[in-house]
Image 1 (cartoon, rainbow, N blue to C red):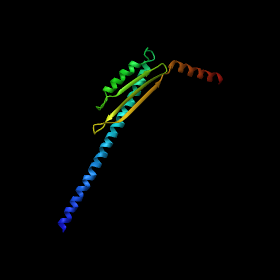
Image 2: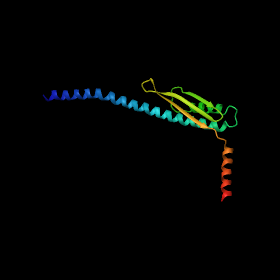
Image 3: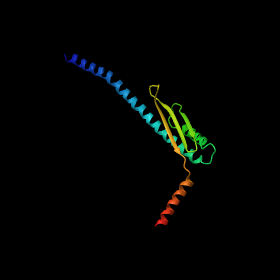
Image 4: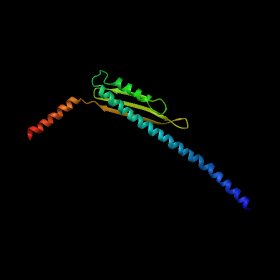
Length: 147
């Protein structure tokens, strides 16, 4: 009777393992995919803001408002990305008042299907530093005169 009981216990452990192991593996792969998604989105957010700020600062004197500088910096940052991934789409719109960078793509899931999609937008408004400095100096001079 004891031998029969031992065989039933071993069989029940096997059945439980067949049900639990795939569930645990699926949750583990889902967490790894989510980690790749968060990392890639954060990395490209920083890249978009860096390129937008560089394009804005160099675009004050250029006729294309810094669009070419921004695109060049984005391609450099895309090539420097440490993890291999799917191709991203980049868009840059430059105007007198604002420079906007948009990056979209998707993370390659561990299962092989294109899964989690992301879109990152970074915009920088153009400011004329000389006008701002003059306004600050005017306010300071008004405060000195009144006191």
